[in-house]
Length: 480
Ligand SMILES: Cc1ncc(COP(=O)(O)O)c(C=O)c1O
Image (cartoon, rainbow, N blue to C red):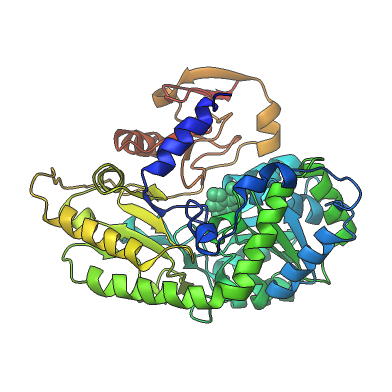
């Protein structure tokens, strides 16, 4: 039988032997090869359903329970649930389990779209906080404890606070102070730690949200540890969370046929993390430090480093995320991403206006960093590359006006109008650069002239905008 087109195409991609600085954390299966874990030839055997002996994700008694318990002990939670629909379903479930329709939730504006999905499904009202802006690299930074305190004082009826920790770029807010504030006001702290499943592997990394005292934490195990895509975990600390309600929401938001391949991969990721993780992380940190030493010698290149700590609300950074900019020598993020991919066979996670983001994990080897550094040096010295001054007008990252609740906006009647003429209208859709999937505009919010101009710039730089039914964004659906 012929192989499917998809298999052929994906094989072609993998045969290019690209250096992976993107998710998933197993880096194209390299770590499985290293530990001689053969999944491929047994794939049919492991893809099973809940027959006797195979346990049940929603009422675990044997193998799944044991595996979840191992993860619970590793992370120091009181309950750990495997997720087969990514962190997205965990975020939606934790929001729905800790609020009732009509409630308020406090949320920094740089949240992932899954948080907004949770807000829509729960029928609640978001109270947005503006994170600090790291203007040099045009990024949203951390959220300060003071901003959270202020938001709670202004909205004492809010039920919960949700933060992203670390953010996509590895920037960490002062979570320990935030925990204290949220506790003092008797609220629940939910943490989107999609990018932090590896933090337990070294004291040289920022404190994990669970260790800091968060109530519920969701991990994309697949992003920074060697699990398959969509394999995630939700961890809970006892006390302020209604576990039965949370379990109900998890069963509501996940498939009734959970994939054993994903669950096995979570189990496998935990074995690697528990047995080899600290050793591998030490090596990774050594390699990153070596890379940074060489990197700093290249003039005109910037990288988010420890020097940002103490500014823009930043308490710490996760150094396994490399946010690199060639803005000063006139190469924008999307251009740099393209050159690395096409000329040097290096695939990074994403590009924004000024930066590329390379996500490393315990599956990356020293040689990967050497290749990245060598490529950056060559690009820096390449006279054939068209360098241009990149002057983006300031963007305020102002929180848009919420005219109607996101959930209501989803169900309201809409009409299609020209995007560039949509200033002042209430959006019926998301406007979202992707990655990272942080919405500029959510359904129910007023589109401003500034957002329209900003989106025009993003598009001209080749950054894709998703969330809109017209993918070219010539038109947009607005509320009638
Ligand atoms: C900060 C953040 N939260 C949540 C998610 C959703 O995670 P998943 O893809 O595992 O559903 C992502 C995905 O990119 C993310 O970056």
